[in-house]
Length: 262
Image (tube, rainbow, N blue to C red; front, side, top):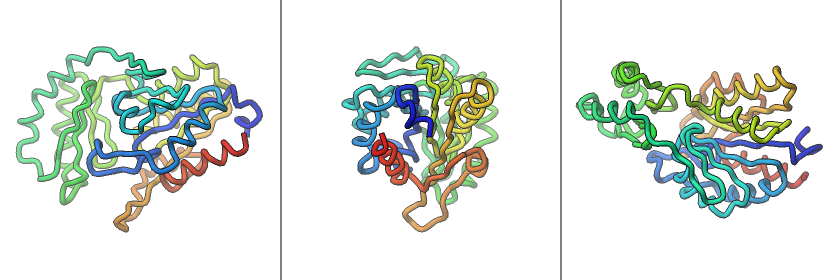
């Protein structure tokens, strides 16, 4: 593996939810799996750059993961709009279009099934249907109106597993990953994610390999729910992955193996 030959030229970037932390019904309840923080600290000291790229606010990721003490860690929040590093947060003001869309949400969600809720991220907002009795049907019913709202406001409507997020156009994990590669000069790039929101980063890895000969690896993490349901596997993400790992615990184990080899 190229990372082992030249670790200081390596960038390892990870999603948070579903990759380092199990998927939970309420986003505020997310926590790192056992051993994740320790392996991140060990890895950060051995490679060029360790980063988390999340749709959450960067400071929320740091707080939920208790990552403030991970030396050298870079956290890009809101798909790269925010940057946290060394205890400092850089964040642009929210797009006014997000606020205009937010004001129209209550009327749009009137009559939504029990359990549907809005996660307000400041820079964007996400409508979650996971707690509903039929989460997929609830999402299918709400999605057309939410997509129209996004189009009216010049926003993007981006689907995930039982969630639809409205956010400023042109922000995604692929552009965030490319910006990190440009800033660090990394010649080895590893990205690990679990949902369709990670697809742009997977594509960026493939494009970097083709365009500039970067040693790239895209890893998909698919968690098996604890209630016995089948794993929620977005097929397009599985198709784009070079390696598949069975959830956050396996991700931590894979990273620990890299640390041991380094």
